[in-house]
Length: 260
Length: 222
Image (tube, rainbow over all chains, first blue to last red):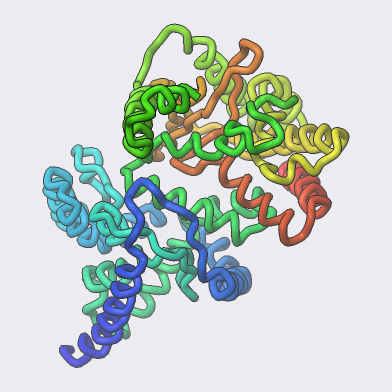
């Protein structure tokens, strides 16, 4: 068992070191000033196309009937179960961001849902006033002042940023399922993958309905959502004014926003 | 301009120091201007524009089972045309490419974008799940722009934040962007459409917007 953990952990630790190094190099931005730093766009587009193709031909065709035929009560139980498994990562990052009250609430939530909620199948903590939070390593690093770094599209994974990529390590190491035998792990991981994809069907359908250029659309939406999460749903509103600057500094064809 | 005049008047002052001093004052003033939260009565008219849109959206959602896409479209069209300042939205979205368009192309784009907005609303607001819209607050931004913060709560789901970026044009309040859970439609489309024009040209963009509208119509009319 120890050997198994070593085999799994060592590559992840190496990846963590590399990514930390990369994010250290990129850590010049402050929390409020994010730019769409897509310096790896050519590589990202290759990964994006790979992910989209695999999704179109393998994952989505499984997730759609799964969503259609699985009763809602089972789907929400499965979603609750996997959310609970990943919740220790939220607990850690609530504390690392100095949100001690929230951290205590998150610990209690994990304990309550794991025990009274039957291994997390039932989310009984939310009605008890212990709401679900969304925290991860990327948000912690942002709170500590680390810059976003380049936008990344990770093959077989999806949109990410250099700053957020170490979260792949902490979220894996803090997931209790990481430590069980592969015979059980793989079917459970497959169920998690299909269930997660099914939960994203509505969002991806909306994207497909709206996007003329899916790569750019996904990147912009992802980066804006990340900023929203970093600020716990209240990103600085000053940023909303920035896109009008071109029209109001006299450099454009009109000094005001009004059309002619 | 004021800073420039002052700099001449106090020419014995080191210019960088003056600039720093002026910039600091401007920074403090602008900061207080756009972080101030307000419940000023003067924004009632802006809130009314948003709430009127929400009222029609609720009407369309509640009647979703009996209304076809085309009916939802025609019900939503007047309120959307009245609430959104599409000429300004189009100009901001097409950014540096706007000035290269002929007056006819601009007019056509505004018309097409109106169709896209109405079709998107008609497509997305196609079911009712005891949804409730709530107006939360109004925040001031720069140059008279404001942010009307609202949220929509569906039964059993987490509430979705809907913030409306608004400005006044000829004495009337208009929506210029909708920000859903932090995703700003205006800035997203601005970057996306610029990329499309840069890589494939303006005609490709308008052809594909028209295609999206037709797709939404045919998928939802089934």
